[in-house]
Image (tube, rainbow, N blue to C red; front, side, top):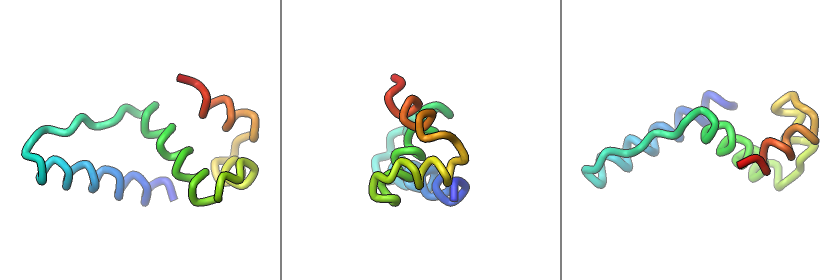
Length: 69
């Protein structure tokens, strides 16, 4: 699932760059991780337990990573 997310996210950024004729700032790995966690929470309807199972991490770890700045 992560590879599909990355593919669509990078494709979205590339299309955005083409439409605006301005260079797009590509996200850092930390930003991508946070975006992916938010994406998983969205598709699991904010079920932290299910999202943490997909990521193979503890619920507490997922929560901590989401609130880190």
